[in-house]
Image 1 (spheres, helix red, strand yellow):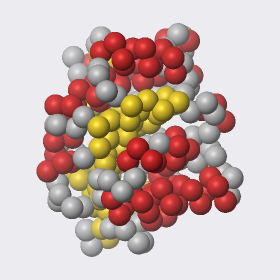
Image 2: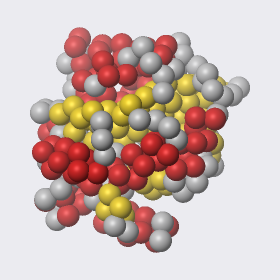
Image 3: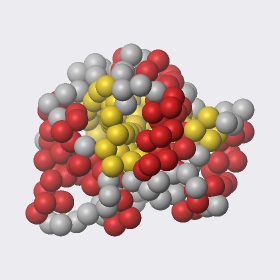
Image 4: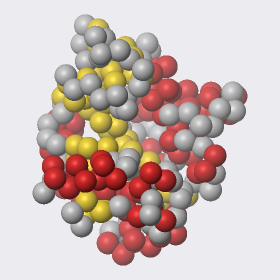
Length: 235
């Protein structure tokens, strides 16, 4: 199992903290968000890890290399004019034809999230889902007969199974279908500012994905209110 962490974003809503460091290195009670994710993966035996950096890439690389060994870092020089689908696309060769986990680097969560995901229906493609929790800014998922059929921010409360925490598991087949769809948007349509979930949503009809129930705590950290809430939750 490999892992892909998408960490290219600007994090402008966390300024002035992010004036000097990338969003993924913003600390929660002293622990950078990215380091928490790396520790979660390593504790679960995942050591083949790729990070896509962008904003303040030199600082991210220096910080990671000081604390961890053998982490692959791919820099997106176009981070300011692209989105996380593009980040996933440029890192595809690091994980294609393999089972892998993918996550956004602005989510602080418990190690149990990864252990549960790895144990969940081992062969399945999966979206870690906070079932029953509808969060306006988060991606929501719709399920039909045990299979996910839609992921989007615009899903209505009465349709949603719950909110995605932006942590995903792909089989080799699922990952290859996902990257093919990313390539379609980026190479053919020249749409560079799309969420990765747009490509994911498009493959649900050909690749079966399931909702892996959340086990543990999590919070996506986009702004100062989120950061304050995370520090209380994970105190």
